[in-house]
Length: 258
Image 1 (tube, helix red, strand yellow):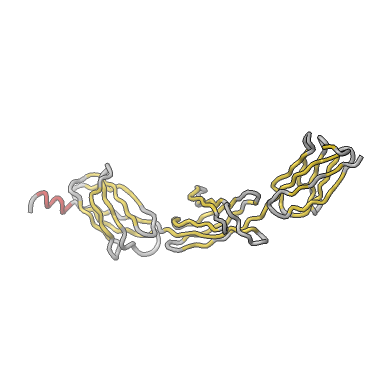
Image 2: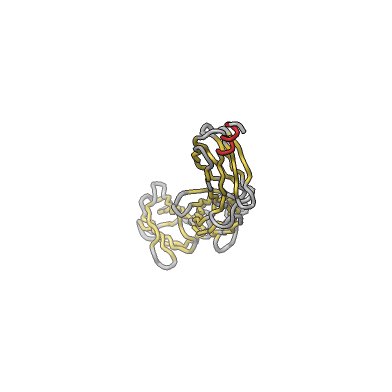
């Protein structure tokens, strides 16, 4: 046996690829590369998650483990003049799907934005709902996440979800619609500038105030659905009932008394 052959036989990297929870990972691909990214060799893990790779010279190498349904993992391994054990742990991934619907009616909400954050508050993914309100994430590491859904003219909503390895989690979300109100204040058949405009809910609580513009216009946004009373004061107060019943802006004009 030559010296070079003996050297190649002794410079071996071996170990196991394991899951964060559960049995070892069989059939994972373990790749060894030098620090310039050139591939040295690769091997599949056996039934016990074990692998073995040989190198010709000592040094520091990059080693990568990847397996279907798991997040790939990369690390460095230093090879001296003998056999080196290097175990690796991969985190399983799972899928997530769901539907965003309007609270009360159950209608799907298209073009809503879904943001996924981990327990540290870092954003790990975003998606948008389709016409049927459906969203999906095909690959998320195991763990607990917070889903936040937002859409124009709706109140944001959040939910917690746990992703398990190799499973498809289902998490539906509901959004409460928000409305808007716009209109004009008139007096003596002309737009009224500077009228005090107040919006009161059906419980008698004032929810918003504004002042009419030079053209008599006013607007309120981000309103919960429901019944309101619109009050304008200038020459003389006037009040009209208003109903906010969906995400589209409602319209109501007020004519001041003399």
